[in-house]
Image (cartoon, rainbow, N blue to C red; front, side):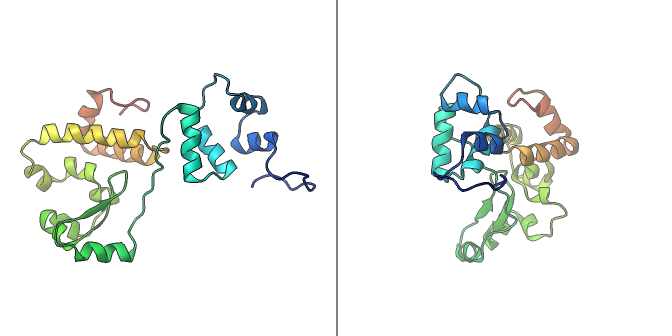
Amino acid sequence: MGLPSGSRRRTPGLRREELARLADVGVSWYTWLEQGRDIHVSEPLLERLVIALRLTPTERLHLFALAHGRPAPMPVRSPESVRDALQRLLDAHPFPVLVSTRRWDIVAWNAAATVLHPDLGLPASSPEERNGLWALFMNPDRRARMPSWDEAVRRAVAGFRMDAARSADRSEFDALVQKLRAASPEFARLCVSTTWWRPPPW
């Protein structure tokens, strides 16, 4: 639990002081939170409370609903592959299928998908090459097949920002954005010309 061992307790569970220590907040502040006072509660703090209290996914949703009055952001998960059972299911499907993460990293596909996107069948020189947002700006073949490219990328960036905003940890999103800004002047100009996200400004 991250706490020093002590004498046996008469009742199970964490004391208020111990929970405050695990969540890295002051005891007084945590007491105010328990009392429902009008204080600002950040998402990172709530996530620390989730870990300290070992809450289930359902309990985490309830905690965020009580504190913020809205659903909890969805955690980012970036697996590098899928389970064999899922890949066999994809391979048996006659139509193109892609599996992507919340950050739009493509982690699995079937043979039919490579007909639409031949680059999926080629070795990737970097993980970004198999990201949906990256491909919109950096893959000339995909761009050539999109007659309304300007409108499509604006919708895509707006959707990407929405997914990032719902994530409990934006670090992976921010890392991709910084790389794409450096690689694509068009993406960099689009970030500068909009105020969809702040902070950080991209």
